[in-house]
Image (cartoon, rainbow, N blue to C red; front, side):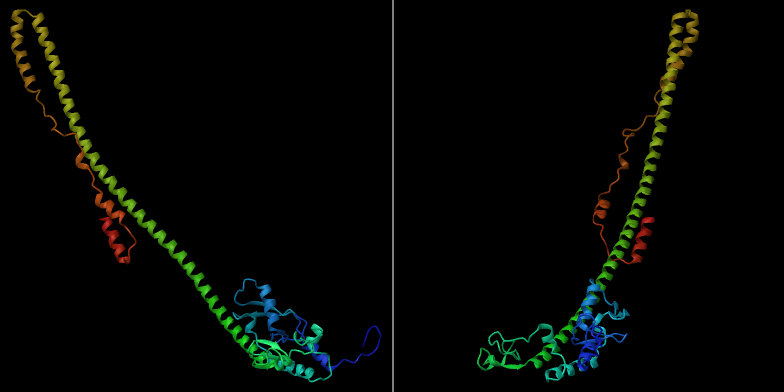
Length: 341
């Protein structure tokens, strides 16, 4: 019923059928292939894929797809929209409907006329519609071009036949793209895993390398302390000996000085008798003091410490050639035990 006029309007069955065969995304008749969602609503696969790509710009594998009619959420697998089931029943109905329109049955004009206003016409023959396909030149053309025009010596075929053939070829190409996409996504996942593994293994080896060098530093510091103790020990021994000799010579010097003063006083202040009485004793003491002045002396080069020179040329060469090896953990344990010894 028309609301404005209040009259009952007869609706053609084909009009109602065309409405049922319209895609809710492009609002035109379904373009094959047609996919069916779990909510039983149908979509052009091309329209569904465009809608999915617009909301999945990074092309992640799988995801959530919302039905544009009822907003039902559909979980897609790694194939995306191409993993949805085709509705062959709707596709067959569309073919029957188009055949009915082409045979002149009642109903609206073909979708091409409704959408574009007129059929595609030949540019060479304006009154001729394009109804055949030139296989040789790979272009659509009209019958007049085949009879009298530039395609008269070419091989031609029906538009529908070429359409179905190229449609099947395109479908195979899409399937190849889907398979290639899966391979690429799998490879990307492997590469991401490899990057993570490289980062983790690198960090682990850096830690091990740091521990090895810390161990070498500790061994060098310990050995350095041991060698310094040996040098300090000999230094203390030599210093003690020298200080002992200094003390002995100082005592000898003091005794000689005291005896000289005593002898000088005896010669200057005593009478002849007193001098003769003490002179003999002083002479004996002077001889003994002079004899004891030959105290032990350090040997030549006693003060040198050159014998503690550390030759590190071989060790420096070995450290300079130190590199990453392929030894197992047992070799590392043996190396650590050798270092501890």
